[in-house]
Amino acid sequence: MSRELALRKARERGANIPVVMSTIEAESNFRNVLGQYAAPSARWGAGFGQVHPAWHANDVRDVAARLRITLPADFAAVPWREGDQVWDRFARGDRTARAVRQVIDEIILRNDEFSMELAVQVISKIWDASGREFDRFLRSYVGPGIPPADVQRRRAMLDRWQRELGQAPAPPPIQAPAYGAVRVPNGITITGPGLADVDLRNIAFFVGAAGVVALIAWKRGQLIDREV
Image 1 (cartoon, helix red, strand yellow):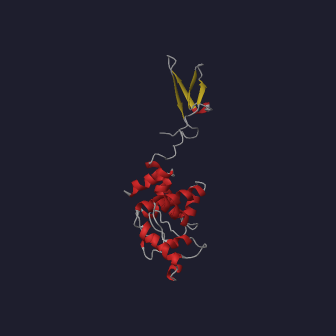
Image 2 (tube, one colour):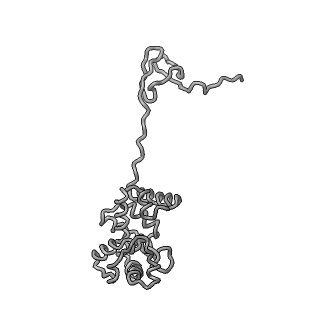
Image 3 (cartoon, rainbow, N blue to C red):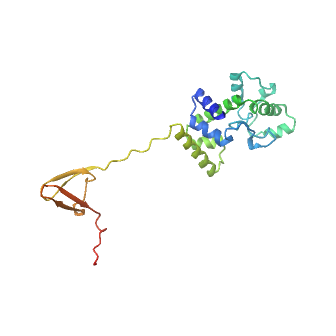
């Protein structure tokens, strides 16, 4: 059901569906779970997209307004200055940090629609801000230190979703051999593919009584005469 929910939310927002689906699969395998799958919840991102409310507070407010969900009053003071650690503030009894944890525990993890809506919104916003270039998107969404192996893992997921959704890039067209013309010794001119710029030294001609011509071609230097 969560995959269907992701597809529906991505279509409703006009998002890049393969990017949304591959990111959610990579982040949570389509599970509405706590980040790192461990407590305390104030430390990690959460939900289908592993979004942390403290760093995407405006998106949390937007989604809450659309879905008519009431946020904790103290959440109005979020976000904070960059680098301020949620868990450290929560451990000190900070009211806004408690509000962040309340959003994670009581709203995101208990409301699949909210969690998915938030994931799709954040993914779409970062995708657009990155110029819709996948590697830049990953460095922004995951972090600049994303390991190369994780980039490859996520790109493989993106490619698979593009194929499944019929959005894979078209294969390059097969280049037909260029047509050319060869004039054989009896005055007959033969045209056909693969005869462009052909070296006549690589061709042997056999002309039949009815004027039918057989051509045998090889690359010079590849045939070696041997005594039997």
